[in-house]
Length: 273
Image (cartoon, rainbow, N blue to C red):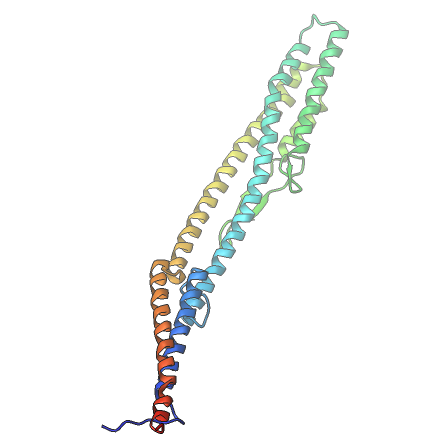
C-alpha cells in the first residue's frame, strides 16, 4: 500500500484542524447557552423560533404596561376608599352633634360650643376629602369625573365612576342652617350619608374589578412566560454534559493536530543516514 507523505501538504493536519475548530465552535455555543440560560438567544440560533420569542416578549411587555395602568388606578381607588372611610367614621359624631343641637334645653352658650365642635368635625371631613388624592386624581372632590384605564390588550377600558357626590353633599351639609338641626338631619345630613354610603359601595366594587382583572392578566403573563421558556430556555443539565463532551473533543483534536504536525518529521527521517 502506498504511503503519501509530503512536507508541502499535511492532509492529517488539515483534518485535525477542522475537527478542532468544529469542537471549539460547539463548545462556544454550549457555553453561550449555559451563560444566557437560553437555547435560542438570537436569530443565528434558530431564526423562526427567535422571531416568535420576540413577538411573545412584546406581548409580555404590553401586558405589563396594562397592569401598571391598572395598579395606578387601584392606587386612586384605594386612596379614595380610605378617604371615604375616614369621613364615614366621622358621621356618627356629626349626627350626635346635630342631635345635641336639637335639645331645646340648651343655653345659647352651650349651642355655640356644640356648633363649634360640629364645624370642626365638618372641616375634618373636608380635609379627608381633599387629601384623598393619588397622582393628582381625587375621586371624592366636587366635580370629579370618571376615571378610565386600559384593562386588556384588546383595547377595552375599565371605568371607575367619580364620586364627586361626596364632596357636593359635604359642602351642602357644611353650608346648612344649623338653627334648625332637625331639618338638617332630615335633609342635608341624610343626603350626605346616602352619598357617602353609595360611594363606598361603588369604590369597593371598582376595587374588586381591578383586582380581578389584574389577577387575570397576571395569570396570562405567567402562562405566556412558561410557554416562552419552553421555546427558548436551555436544559442546563444537558448543556453541562454537552460542554464536558465538547471539551473532551477539543482536547482530543488538539492532540490529533499535534500528531499530524509531526508527520513531516517522518519524511525528514528518510534522509537521515
